[in-house]
Length: 130
Image (tube, rainbow, N blue to C red; front, side, top):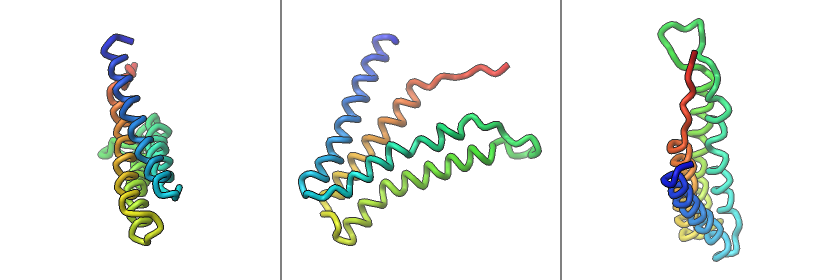
């Protein structure tokens, strides 16, 4: 790994730590640990894309170049991301958590998921097809 790669990993780990810190603080400051579910949803969000990314496209469809499994992975990832943003809002609206905890949890979740996306795009390895 080159020097630029190490600096990138250090920066991304700092941002990831700040995101987790915000999520944990949103729980600890108001003694309500439900916003911790946001960190779980943002950590689990890229998994469907990672699982379904290597599925081959359908051979029977001439005009559609994607695969149903890949589309399912994109859909499940989108559902998980929307859940990560909506869950603190729903909990704050129902007065289960405080609005400040909602904001801290969403910002922390954005930092966590943004770090995961940035890492996967920076260190993406292209595979050669034969």
